[in-house]
Image (cartoon, rainbow, N blue to C red):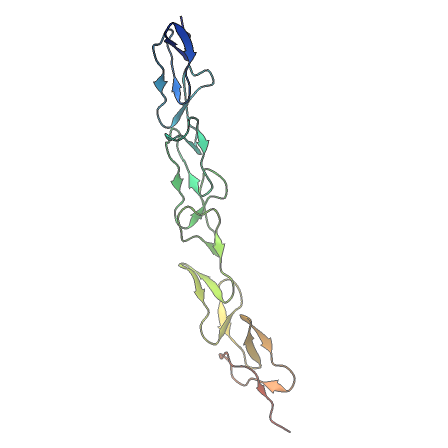
Amino acid sequence: ACYPGTYLSSGNCLPCSGASYSVTEGAGSCTSVPLGYQANATKSGLEICNVGFYRDSSVTTCHRCDPGRFANTTGLSACYACAAGQHAPFCGSCIGCTPPTFSNTTGATVCSSCSAPFVFSSTGCVACGEGTYRVNAYACIDVPAGYEYYNHGIRACSPGSYQPLSGVWSACLPCPAG
């Protein structure tokens, strides 16, 4: 008689293959493994896919979710994309982005941060307004008098020049003669 994990075909015991198994002696065929499960090593029973793993019809064993996706219960046939505002740098679980980082797409593997001239807001990155520059990840302030806007920041007017106004992106002016 054929043992569990095999089936009888033309008088021969053949092993179950792929995503199939048999639990009885003398089985005439193997049974398809349901999605979210895999056959055990001897193909004589089932193992449920663990949290963080899935099995769909394209694979024969449970596979780890890709980064940016998760499976929060056992026996899943698919992994789900992390929601906007979250990321999954590793496989299987989503983590919220902590300010000043964000994710405004689903399935993110990393959180993004804003670079100058942008600052963090609850909706993502926003540009600093006219006459202002970024001082940190959250704030823009007016360009002070005596400085000019330069390369998304500010620099002091060089000797022989000045800027009498604050809150402008104008270049420093040459000092008048005398």
